[in-house]
Length: 72
Image 1 (cartoon, one colour):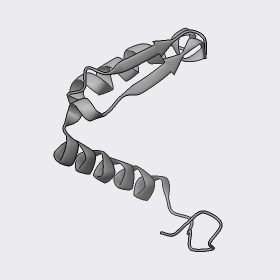
Image 2 (spheres, helix red, strand yellow):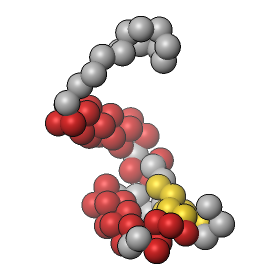
Image 3 (tube, one colour):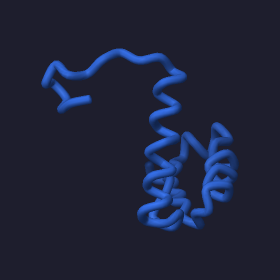
Image 4 (cartoon, helix red, strand yellow):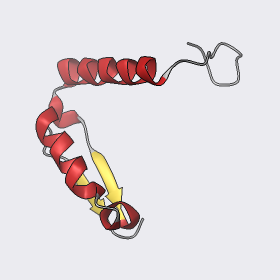
């Protein structure tokens, strides 16, 4: 992996991408604690019902930090 525009990026599968994201989230949680993580949801997310899913994810992750901004 390299800098954006550096030509070092490669296409990966969705499975590889989700595995990489999961690993990075684990690293953040281990290094900084679950409280270091926040997710935000705006009006469209609330209307689409994503606020509940975000809350559930944060609860499982161990973070109390959810930002709901109905102006975004």
